[in-house]
Length: 227
Image (cartoon, rainbow, N blue to C red):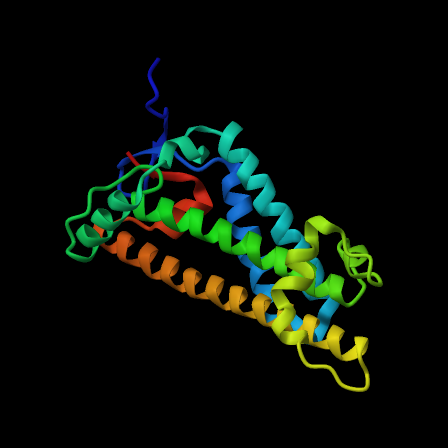
């Protein structure tokens, strides 16, 4: 069976092009960009917008993971299952302008995909814990009263114990405030880590576009790349 993509037409300069990114990947990518930007920029100023943007991010990541197993060729994880050494080698060759061009994800691009999926999942999870600590959202029951399930006890109460170590006249109220502050701090750190990864991703895409002489962001709009 020939796995070579069928030609999808010619580019502006008459070069032959092929379809690489399917419609789902393209819609996922740009919708995720918007949803994450909205979530990051709103926070406490518009909490409901922030929360719903977070839900959208979470849903998109789950769908992308599923599509990574059943989607088209270049969308599947098996198409860019590179190891850390391959990613490092590619990054070194990229900064020295000697990188090999890949039709789908490059080794460094693959590493960034996995890193962003992990960081975004963690951002959504910690965001749900922050919201649940305020007795809102799907995780609110975990924080109701003292009835914390054994399975989640180590996550919800034991880990942030340092925040609740001190107690004053308010007792449980003070303890709850420290617990909530713990998850807020973790959520903020993860959100900023994700933003850091986004900047690295943008820089990598810009450099790869320069080295390979092709507009990679535009390819994520059209789905087509030079054969």
